[in-house]
Length: 388
Ligand SMILES: [Zn+2]
Ligand SMILES: [Zn+2]
Image (tube, rainbow, N blue to C red; front, side, top):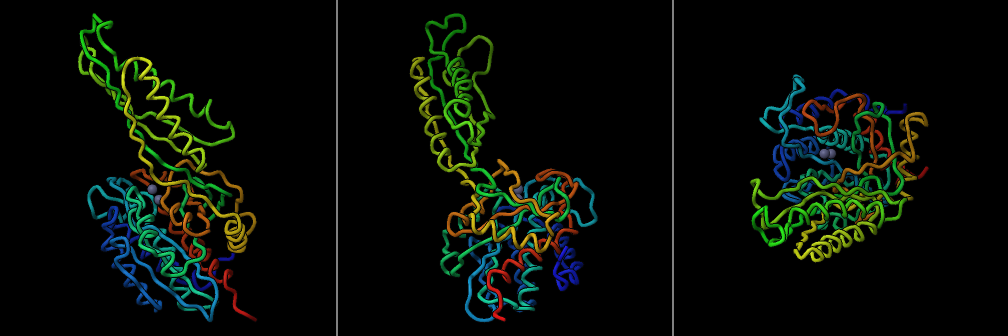
């Protein structure tokens, strides 16, 4: 492994920052103390410019290199999850019911490590722009930062982010070509029939029967309406109707999630779901109202940026510590909005044999931070190499 020496030297500092952040987790856009800590560190490192209050409690910082060159964005997420921590680590969350169960404490610490190194060494041309965002876990903080004009204001022409991945060897980098993560949409279907006595179904329009038919029919969308090579999933997670044994209710409800790696299939899925629910209900004499809620779009890696990230990862991790063409995930991620705005890549770094993301005994593996920070810093140095 070729972890940058200077970063290896302050590995213990990154561990301390990470554990401090771990003990004081904050939810959604309320990353007030986290942003305060990030700003305090960035000031100590001597970065050139700091903007606070972006997307409520996001932070953007700039480190100028030597002379003109590309502007590379590096992004970390700062928010935690509403989970009660159970792992029993000595630096466990001080805040009841809130914990860093997705490792965003580690992502923030790795980006701080890269910032410290880049501010000290400045061995690059162009500019590094560090983006610390709130509200990845459901609030779309990444979208809010893009809408706040961060990409244009700082002239970011390429952007990268890391996410730790349990079950992958510690510090191994996995890079997915194309879509790395899926869109995450939700739907609600209200089926309105006509209620009545359970013994006289012919005098009613039974919404339960209609809901069951729609539920089965929706399962044919992925298998019959999409290209078999498309990667998508439709899951019904809620099915409610009625409250007793002898009454056919007026209404029934279905709800669930639709995820796909393909932006075009996404629209087709939404349209098919709506048409199928409405026409099936109509055929039964009932009415279906579909509310389709678009969530995060797929996280799509740019081909050139992915190849570049692969070269840098190989330099840091060696060929044995890098997996190109890694499997994508059907989880969703709001870095997708940044990748819609500018080319870049979303890269996974192995967290070792830890508990899974979003579980109460998960913990970020501090051992991997020097590798992650070296990768991020090296992206900037290789994007704008110093003239010899
Ligand atoms: Zn998460
Ligand atoms: Zn996460």
